[in-house]
Image (cartoon, rainbow, N blue to C red; front, side):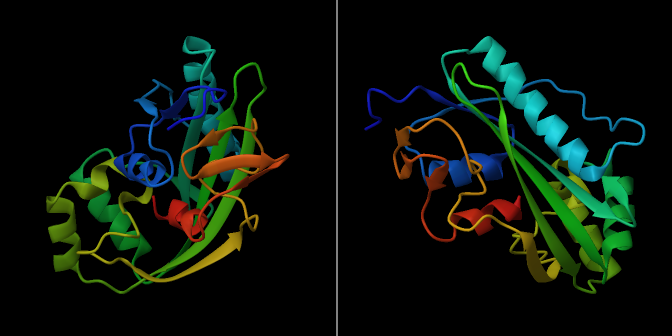
Length: 214
C-alpha cells in the first residue's frame, strides 16, 4: 500500500516497456502520454536532445498535475554521430535496421523526475550496443510484426524473436541508483522503490540495467 505521505506517481510515457518495468517496482501509478515535439534542434547534441525531451515530457505533465511526482524518459539511438528517432514507416525501419546490422551504436537515455514543487532532476545513461549480423529475411519478418515502428532506432534489444543484439556495454551508470528514476528526487516510498537516503534512490538489483532495454 502506498504510504500516505507519498504523492501520486505519474509515468509520462506511452511506452509499454517502461510501464511494465515501473510496474515491477511500484504497485500504483498513473500513465499519461504528453504531446511533445521530438524534432531535434539545429546543432543539438544527442545527449542534449534526450535530456531536453525527457524534461519537456515531465514538465508538461507536472504543469497539468502539480501535486503529483512525474517520471519521464527519452531514448536516442546514435550511429555515425546521427541521432535515429522512431521510423516513419516500414521502409525506413528496414533501412535503419540494415544500417545498424553488424555495427556498434550508442543508446542514450535521459530520465527526468519532477516531484511536487521541485525543479526537474535528470540522469543520463549511455550504453554501447553491438548488433549481430542478422539477414534480410529476419529484418523483413521483424518489420512485418510492427514492433520496430514505435522504437528509436527501429528495435528493442530485449526482443526475444528478433534478438538483434550481440553485445551490450554500459558506458555510464550510477551504481546503486535506478536508471528508471534517476539519482535524485523527493524522498518518498512507492512499493519496492524507497527514497530513505537523501540524494539516492534504492531499487532491486538489476532494475537499472533493465531500463536500457527500452
